[in-house]
Length: 503
Ligand code: NAD
Image (tube, rainbow, N blue to C red; front, side, top):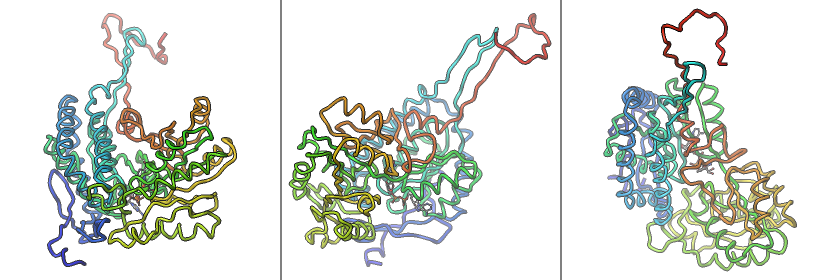
């Protein structure tokens, strides 16, 4: 352990409105990916810590669900303003623990904030339906009620935005929430929880449990946890969905991705190259909506690859906190080495390493850096195509026709996002109609929906029925109750043993 850690931080849980130590005695390291140094140690929750946090959240539930919609909305407005005021502090935390650039971190915060703004509208969002005179003197109406204690389990790549996708709506709907953030990036959630409490959120409504699989497994088994929202890799998403639903919970589990960008021969090549660079190498490719495969149709391949190749040397790779850096490091040394290994094997699999990001000037730096890479002539069956790389690598698959490109995309096991680049409106509309992915961009490379739509992929990119945040988020965090009501006129009351009819 480095010397500097003698006074290093021990990062705690946040339970019942205050920092809480762990009972487990287990901790894990937190790294600064830009320096390659360990900067803190984080407590890992035991099963008993989970039980304690869930008990605290359960105790807070009755009063919170009874809190008026206007009061909930008022707290959310204040929470929104406090996040706004602390943007820079939050961005620094994101950059320090995750490695992303400050500009990228600010973007993440802005997109997370949108979800709090959406949740501020909870009085309108929870409106039910009302049918007067469904039968003579009988009215029927629907109300939506919270579930109880709900949990969120989040990945390393969006340490603020993904927790905000979940917590804003969960709490607005009247649930109490236990968040288990990625152990690689534990601090952003603590700041968010602290700001929520400064905004007036009662103790126990929002709790943060640091930890690993031990905490996750106890949340999955705990009878008082009614629903689980998960975002992370596909194998874990599948495990969370299968285990959570087997234990009777409502689960939405978002998994990994392999997002294809289909470029038709009529596309504006320079604009498509700009988009591919931005969406492929932004956040060093560590976005679930990053473009990782370019499907080049026909004659567009050569000029497009050339335009991308020309842009790559201009990308400024450097520490996220450093002014001017455009691409930071990967999150861990292991991940950097894994991606480098995929590049190492690409040529022997039959692909062409058009730009090799393992350039010594970048990889010899202290942190977990890797330059941008471009792999031409990729194809199914090669590691660079089959695996979710989650690094700064764009693979190009050359196809002859639109139909061949579409087939490739639809046969891929993932279906998170996809994009088409063309000037032909009819082709774009046809693509939107027949492509099998949950989020589609038309000349937009990263089509992350705005907060008043919902986010989610298809196939192995999402397990569950409801997408995350937006209207489907409100549905996920509430259950419907239908009330049939009569206020009989005593003069018309009579015994009738027949099944009630409405006509
Ligand atoms: P991950 O699956 O390793 O971890 C996600 C969460 O699961 C973390 O909180 C982690 O502690 C926990 N976890 C890890 N292993 C576990 C196990 N064996 N049992 C129980 N819990 C476990 O994912 P990551 O590396 O943090 O994030 C990157 C992945 O997330 C990528 O695959 C990316 O595509 C995906 N992702 C998807 C979306 C989406 O919206 N679909 C968004 C962001 C990230």
